Length: 168
Image 1 (cartoon, rainbow, N blue to C red):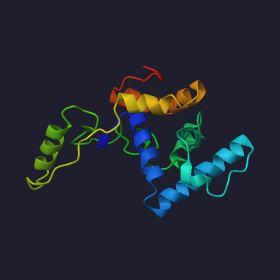
Image 2: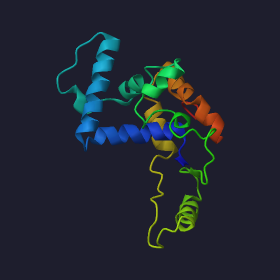
Image 3: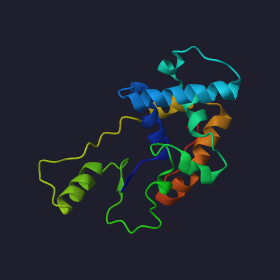
């Protein structure tokens, strides 16, 4: 099982959705706009889905905030990882921290352990550095950031990540 710092995952997912390389990603963008229109009592332009903002995305993925049972209804890409892979209930042979500085060595060890050919390597670049994180977080209200961070409380505890502050 692999895992990432929760808010890094959110930024990565937002970037992926904004790239709209598939119809499914475009559909997610349309759901984000529709949810925010209802939330704010407005009607967006028909093409608003082409340019969703990070705060709108955060509103959408935190829409079940405070109701952990509903988190299972979230898309698997932004569902808390402990609800995807159940690390407390499954005895995994490998846990790979995707944010680790030793990721290249860890992933190579994992691949060789399962008999993968020596030419096969996992990608291990972390494109969302601290500057990037905080440029995204600075777009959020304090309440939005707290909802987002709190939604992943269990992941922070289970995987030992330090909880981020909005403007560190």
